[in-house]
Image (cartoon, rainbow, N blue to C red):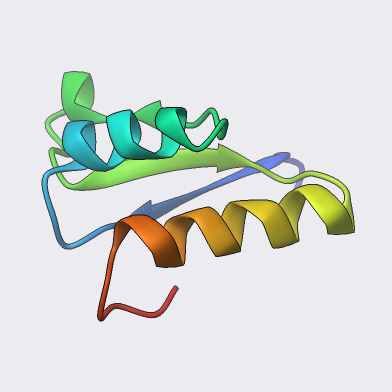
Length: 66
């Protein structure tokens, strides 16, 4: 792929997940303006950044594994 980001379905309200991730210092983009209310876009980062993102995602989506 030529893109440096991925989109994924949070299976929750995407804008709420976005707010929770921001509180953890993780910046992603909600996709509700594109009629994708439960989806987020995240840029691919360094291995450390990716690990931090996955940890934050697990913290804000309890019971759901990324």
